[in-house]
Length: 369
Ligand code: SAH
Ligand code: SF4
Image 1 (cartoon, rainbow, N blue to C red):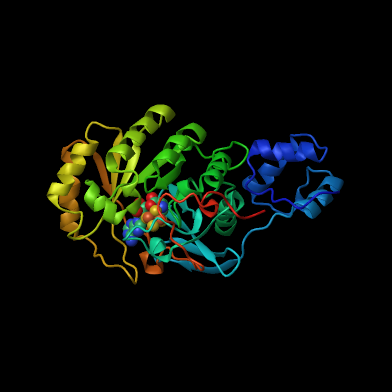
Image 2 (cartoon, helix red, strand yellow):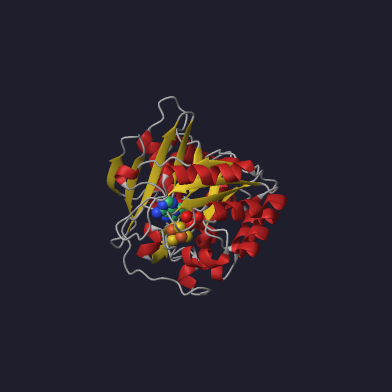
């Protein structure tokens, strides 16, 4: 055995095949390993029984497969589970599992913190520390599956959404790598429609995603005019609504996806008036769009309040009357601060990216090396 240790968790199929060829093995070893890792949640090479003993030894020494330590687990009264995972150097990220009848959604983090600085989001308030590697993203899936157990031999995770901490499209390479494993028949076997990337609106990356991953796309819109969106979602100053929506419609065309989901957090007296609903309807009418209205989830420093249920209903009925499928998302796990926008983890050395930054720290993963 020679060469440095590598982390095989999170490596897409082709790169894993190249790894095996590089150590003088057949490429099909990649398939075997992927089945063990993602199919069985098995990370100990010594127990991978269809792999020869010398190769098992070699893998154990050369490519240790490790999951992050769980520093806390909380379970909500509604069955939602939140794990806090050690991300090294005193940092922590959070992953949430949301069970519903007939489906189980895992909400994964893509960054330690977030630099986008949306004014209504707990993660945004913390600032950004670093990108997660593909291994750290896939570790959340493997770990959750393992923790949840699958007595019937079937994964309880039917959907994965990039709606945890971070802006996934600001960590493009790692997120695309993770998506490729989530939809790979030899790994997590999810259909593209069951993997959703949620973005605050990084237009160039939306266009690249259409070429490289073609998964379901959710866009955090939250306002129907640029003046308000500039305030709520500052990236809008670089990529205003018209430009963002153009990228969305092109995404549907290029990927053959059914529609884009637009997320809209309901903030009392800020973006929830009937006039704002009508303007939103005008933007989305006759387009491949559906709307998720999200009740605002409070966090300690928040300066907003949740819209009253009657206001949300009226907003929804204006959109529905315009023919736009609109659902009000049920708040899940808010008793354990696991609801949308409440994930905080532990983010130190925080920075907020100056908009338009080309700083390499914000472009690529820094772990594992
Ligand atoms: N960064 C990505 C994905 C993570 S946030 C994005 O912004 O899309 C997942 C969703 O939760 C987004 O739609 C986000 O706008 C929303 N959200 C953030 N803070 C929230 C809060 N306090 N209450 C309700 N939803 C919130
Ligand atoms: Fe980041 Fe999304 Fe929160 Fe905005 S809403 S700060 S993009 S995690």
